[in-house]
Length: 237
Image (tube, rainbow, N blue to C red; front, side, top):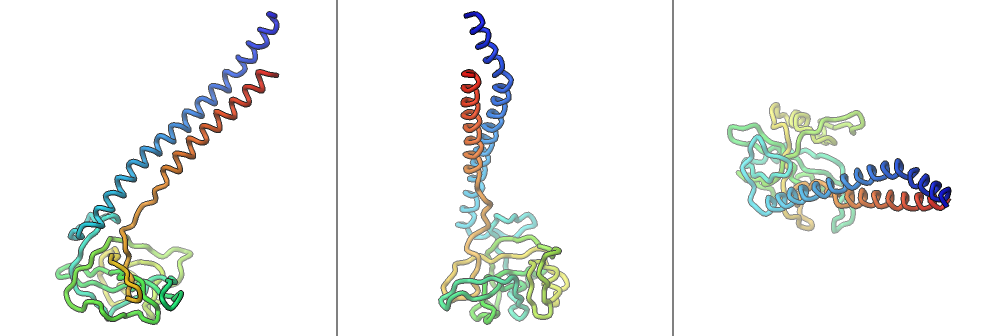
């Protein structure tokens, strides 16, 4: 009897180190899951702020406007200096149509002009009618400059076709030597068959924190289950 008790006690002692390691691993995984839940709460707050900003009128442009701020900029669109950015296919009433983003300079009194992305247009209709020719206010959000990389498609400055949203390069092709170092992405409601088709929402950061939290908690559960099965087999051996 004493020998059997000794063997059983030895089996239990053999589980101490693996059990400690499993416990530390579970604690780490649970900690990561809890951290993701805190991140989820933080991200939901940001998304609520973005939704509130979309519902309000744009605020005057300042030097600190972030990508999740809705701003309003007053000026005059230079429709004679239009360019096309990107190459996208949109579903229209006529079916899938190739097009791009219509980029037009917005001249401002006493300030550098800003390139404005007014929205998607078919390539066959790069300068649609109906855009304001006098003073106007553009509501939108700020997009930072993107510089061409090794794998970027080559731009066509002479044809005013660009595949990288780089204000300096686009402005130079339009004959503007000094433009703002960012692009204003116009916001508005899309109407079928009316071009350009502006962006409808401010950019939203991804929110996958709940899935990440469930993944970490699930992994912690798997460790507990696997350790339980392994321990039971060792104790029965």
